[in-house]
Image (tube, rainbow, N blue to C red; front, side):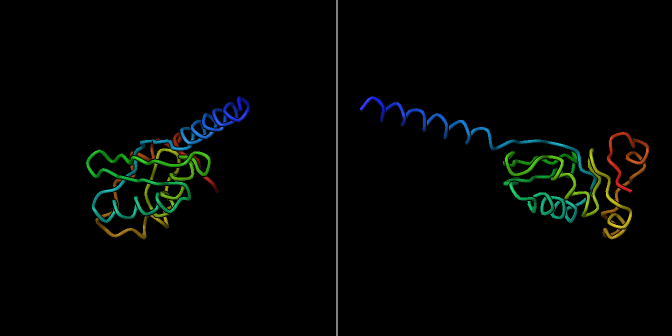
Length: 123
């Protein structure tokens, strides 16, 4: 009987530990201007497997994402957002993706262009 109780207690602790380790929340800057940007940015973030929540604030330019850290990481989320035309701290959108944005969505890129050490460029 003691063995069964001990095994149950161990199983409960292991299950609780893995559940707590999975969800992670991060905030980072994403360049954009308007409600259309907000929808596009949040949709791109949520398209990454493991992302359960994405909320971009137009005023602060910050996105809050919650994701399962066993399925994805913040780098993959930032890459997905950059692919739809929005610069992030780790990934700069291609000129092609940026130029596809609606006119009101084309944000000032001069700050990001000057800060190249923050980006990973793939040529």
